Length: 222
Image: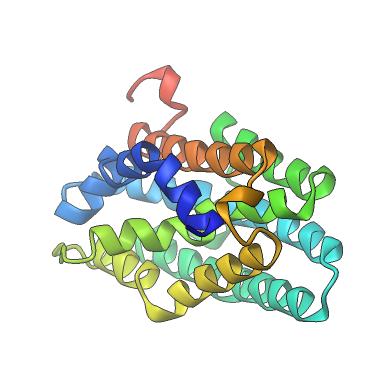
């Protein structure tokens, strides 16, 4: 069993929870309140800015030129394509770019991004990669699990199609391959690697719940 397969097996309940998260199920069924989706897009925009910061630090921690080049491409694509998708979607929904760029992060967003930046700065490279996988691979996993859904809402349909695309799958596959070169099998997993993967996975669940509630989950619903 590969190290990544072991991490997936160990966190099966968390992954199941992501798929059955009310936000994700609302997307799949087309019943998600539009306000929740727009709240998500604005917070995800803030998240992606800090995520690219974490990846920039990770790039500097890579030893091999090919890995540095991969992170450089991912940073470029995140800033210029994925975030541009957020801008266009919000503009179509009546949220101007100035409003999007002035979004205040929730405590959930702040906690998750601060964790990733700290991980990229201080942790061993193997733990950095494990902590980034729940975002890069996790979104493809979720979108694939609900991929048969074809909600009528074009915003929700576009979200599913984007994250289950071959292009997005390739990003996750490349990060898994990079991870496997350093952690080839289950026997090489350390407590730190396991903790990094599980922590980011838990944050992904919490992020979706935050979007569903349109505020930090522990504060209740609007």
